[in-house]
Length: 231
Image (cartoon, rainbow, N blue to C red; front, side, top):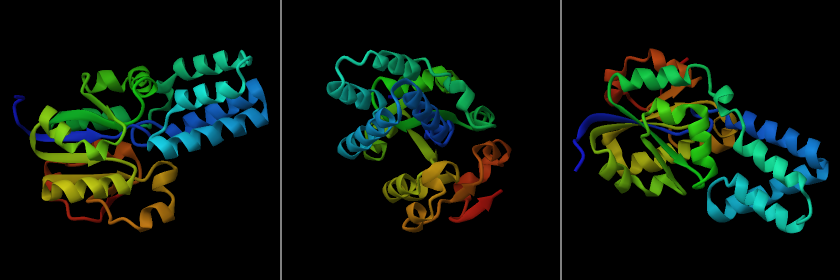
């Protein structure tokens, strides 16, 4: 049984530490260069269909399905390599690693992400985030359903969850109550979409950028009142 920590900091990856919107823009541009506008549009149609079915983004799965419609298109091999070899470290948000370091001075830092079992770990590893949290990486299809597993692997008296989706923060807060402090960095299209945020309660703490967390007084986080804002 792992030792119980005083506090564990849980971090989402996409659009929390890593600018995933920019990665998608780069992929869109590459798809259009390699296969044309029609190919780009069709790939993202399949991607959204698959995300609706699975509940998480599956970039390689969408590419595999696209291939079933274009079995003799060898450009798909170049697109696959583009995804696997993408320089993810360049897309870390400013201050992301500093935020992890600041939190690590107060407790364990753990990545808690949704995603597939191949591309998402690759993204975490190549971005440098895997090393930054010393291998404490959890990737699930639906992380908000796996909180018992999180507690079993990283037991703590208190948790802090940092995520760009208020929906996820609200689900975790409902399950853990006062045991959890929620932090909402307003980054990426989900966090900046007023329709996506209006239906959920505010996080304990809202940031304009993840780098601001590097300058927070962390011992006070367990007592933050909902709706407090920095930035």
